[in-house]
Structure formats: structure tokens, C-alpha cells
Length: 223
Image (cartoon, rainbow, N blue to C red; front, top):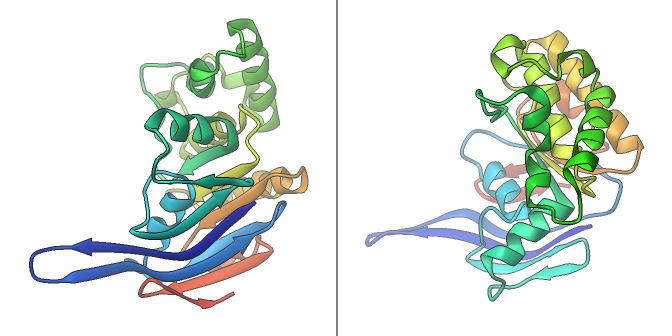
């Protein structure tokens, strides 16, 4: 589902080169639930961003769902792959305050010409039911708790039925009870067939996953 080969990410200044990632080789099969762990600044978020086509490697190759990602790909093509194949969950939710819950959830479908507005509403209601928030669909994000905001973010991430979910510290801003509820939702999504890659610093959160990958100083140290 995700294959990274000889990935390097180098930040260069006039005086030195800094390797954020150094010779990463990684294959994540379909249906896996993987956590990436490591200390702050080790490169784990950079790795996730490269998987999500939000960043480009200095060297190496990326394959997403049998699609090779090439340097010649246009921004439009990359955006299309992200929109159709990938879903993103962030620590800080990234909801738009001026929009209702259901409008936030429908945002990714604005770029899908194959889905009508009526279909978008139906899909949004279904995913909000999946995360237990149908009773909040007309509320604004400011009227929700942190855990509810993250549920909205999950609903937004899965509305387009992506094959891959990428989650960057999805429980980082939540208390332990809310964090556990979010991990139970992600576990269920994985059981339904979604491949999930999650960055986390928390051992308990990582315990929900099938595989833990550890990274240190831009290199994999355990698979």
C-alpha cells in the first residue's frame, strides 16, 4: 500500500547539510495499522508528510497504492491522489470555525466532481453517524469538546473513503479518556479495511497498532 525506497530528506544551508531522513526503506501492506515513534525532532513527522505527498524527498522513491510518485507529477495530480487515496488527521484538528460540523466534514468533497452536493450531504451524515456525532452536525466547532472536534476531523478524513489514513499525534491534545475513544474509532476503521499510519509519542496509544516503527536521528531503528 505504501512503499518507500532509499528515502533521504536533506535540508541544506551554506555551511552544512542536515539529514531529517537518511536512507529509509519501508513497506506498509494493505490493511496494516502502524505507529511511528521516536523523540521530538527525529524525523517522524517528515516521514509522515512524505507518505502523504505533503513533502518531497531529496532522494528516493515513493509508491502509494501502486502509483509511483514522480518528480514530474503536477501539483494538480498530487492533489488528486491525496484527495482520493489519502485521509489526514492532525493533532490540532484544523477545523474551520465559521463552518458547521457537517460543512467541515464535506470540505474534501468540494474537489470531487464525481460527487453531487446531495450525495455529499448523505455521505457526511453517514460518517458523522460512524463517529457518533449526528446530533452535533449543525453545531460549530467552538461548541464541541476537544474529543468531539477530533471525531469531526476523523469524519472529514474518511468521507471520501480513502484507502489510507495518516494521523499525526491524533490524541496529543486530548485527555486519556477522549484519547482512548479516538483510538477505538481508528481501530474499528482499520478492522473495516483502512490502512492507518500514525505518528505518536505515547506508548499506550501505540499499543493499539499492529506494528511499531521506531525512528531516531532520521533512521529506522526497529521494524
